[in-house]
Amino acid sequence: MSILTVKNLSHGFGDRAIFKNVSFRLLKGEHIGLIGANGEGKSTFMNMITNKLEPDEGHIEWSKRVRVGYLDQHVVLENGMTLRDVLRGAFQYLFDLEEEMNEICNKMADAKEAELEALLEDMGNIQDILTHNDFYVIDSKIEEIGRGLGLTDIGLDKDVNDLSGGQRTKVLIGKLLLEKPDILLLDEPTNYLDEQHIEWLKRYLQQYENAFILISHDMPFLNSVVNIIYHMENQSLDRYVGDYDNFKQIYEAKKLQLEAAYKSQQQEIAELKDFVARNKARVSTRNMAMSRQKKLDKMEIIELAKEKPKPEFNFRKGRLSGKSVVSTEGLIIGYNEPLSKPLDIYIERGQKIALIGANGLGKTTLLKSILGEIPSLSGTIELGDNLDIGYFEQEMKEANYNTCIEEVWTEFPSYTQYEVRAALAKCGLTTKHIESKVVVLSGGEQAKVRLCKLINKETNFLVLDEPTNHLDQDAKEELKRALKEYRGTILLICHEKEFYQDIVTEVWNCEDWTTKIC
Image (cartoon, one colour):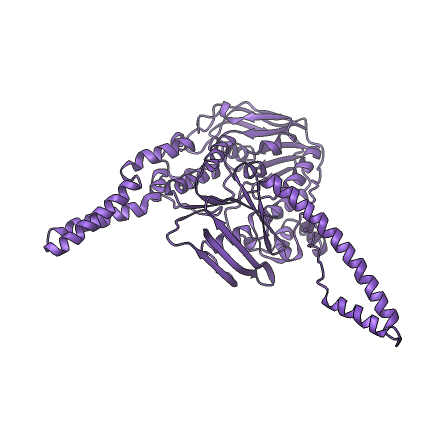
């Protein structure tokens, strides 16, 4: 039985088509991986099936009484709420039922006998629902999920406004799992999660009995939890049974088969056209020529999918920096309270260092303290001579209404429009992306615009905070190659071991110096 049926879906933004006549079905127990390059419309598709966005054409139908839980990569938490408040929000519908039951109790005092019987029945039904959904053990359920995701270590009474990106993601995942929906919709759930909790989420999804749809560019993670792949490419959506590795094999074989069929057909078309051209004028061969022309007219032409532009990242190297890049003495980082023990750090020219560890330990705070964006609580920071710093921030918090061209032009005013367009195209963006406003692009496309600004700046010290978030596989591989070849110094925060292990010369575990164990 189909839980979700999508028929003949079409959608676009302006003159840019995203889907064309797309169909999709979700069956009970299916663990679906929704994959595709940046900008193919994966998040748009999620927004449509959750009624956040209306399609231009097509039909979306859910089964009756299906509860859907959606982890949106762009969701916002309200300031002033604690972690516990957010997690308790998962049970809001039960609190509403409790309130309804209390109202029934008040009505019973003045009810007549006939009414009383109906009220008692309603009250019994609500009581059963509350008991069945663990209403009377809510706090212990919250504690259980909180422990699994490391939220109890952060403190369930902490304000959500004080959380790091990874901690916010954990809270949202925790709330979603507590809701126990019939269907899980997960958009990049591993972004900002540390290795320990990615592993926890992996085990949870492997044992998950209901269906889910997962968008992820973390291929080892996706490969370990899905049994169906839906591939989004060139406005179409194709279904493959099996995991990601199986999809890759079938996809490559289909691609080779299509290319062979295309070449064969093109040769046949050329021969037919040549015969028609040579013989249509002669009376004796005109009929044969017309017959071949009819064959040409009826032929279903094979079209090859347009190749997506592959990104090319080549960092411009600045002048040679001094031998000492960063040195600190007794450095304590934090905001209102210390996040670290006193730190004596020394980074030398040419070192490539990965900062790892759980969320909320102060990794981003350390980077911002070194760059002078936030003051340290005590101690000294000394930056070396002749430093040309390139900083990739984890996430841009404000909506950007510049076009991609304006965004890069502001950074490099001496560039011609041709040079700006060429720089963006090298990062894997098409003409339509380049002319669009940054705010309407996908997370991966926005990251490519920011990388474009970074690689065109002369640098000798790269400070990168989760640069792989939202990037598709091609972009990740190209960024990895570029960072391996980079001759300057690198300080990198990353939770994807497969990405950083071949780049860095050292790995620093921030759990060794933090005052927070999360």
